Image: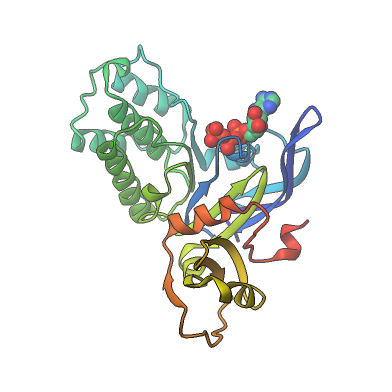
Length: 296
Ligand SMILES: Nc1ncnc2c1ncn2[C@@H]1O[C@H](COP(=O)(O)OP(=O)(O)OP(=O)(O)O)[C@@H](O)[C@H]1O
């Protein structure tokens, strides 16, 4: 069973399709980075996943069921972009509220986390720092003991230290529970150490989806004389291509095969940020596991 499956998923507002033909399949236990520029459709996709929106085309299945079903909803925790906290509540009030709303509630987990972080239960949420508020929201989401945790920009507006702390807390929880996590972010470098699955959304379409280790292994950055670039580009899949008069730099997808290269090319691996930026610069390039499905 997959944790998340979308098939030809689409959403429109009036006549404007903001998501189209999105197909993906995420195995359970993965930590998914949902990445894309402003307006790409990340929030829309997450809202479809958690049942806040209905698709206008295709379908989505979550934990084997439909997103809006009561049984599925009990197993999902969603942290919206605008942190769903009540500023006039104390932290303890938030926990009491969570306990009332959630049958699988683990208050002890939330209290232990907050104590470790030094966040006082008696403090009003509105008087906590942005980083502390993010930690309270995450603690509430984790205390729900979800099988799928969906976080929309959990790191927005946090300083680098708070971002690091939130991600570390999240990773500890993932290691302890084995849940599936989907989180959207603009800051790819925050995700590199923690996420193991990438979904790159661009202009409402999924451009790249798959296991990050596999994706990194099959992409290379080649640098060499500009006059050799056209010949090489005819033989390999070029994702991104930048040239000066004398030098060409090509980010290519190798698909596993090892073709002999002219020794004047130097080659190296890419990191996640380079890979994401290369695809974003070329919206027509795609790296999808099953092209037939992706076109559905
Ligand atoms: N309720 C709505 N009515 C009309 N258009 C909408 C609505 N919600 C979103 N959109 C449009 O859908 C597109 C995708 O928006 P969405 O918020 O899903 O993108 P995003 O990738 O999350 O962006 P960001 O990174 O800026 O949060 C945008 O063009 C947005 O203007």
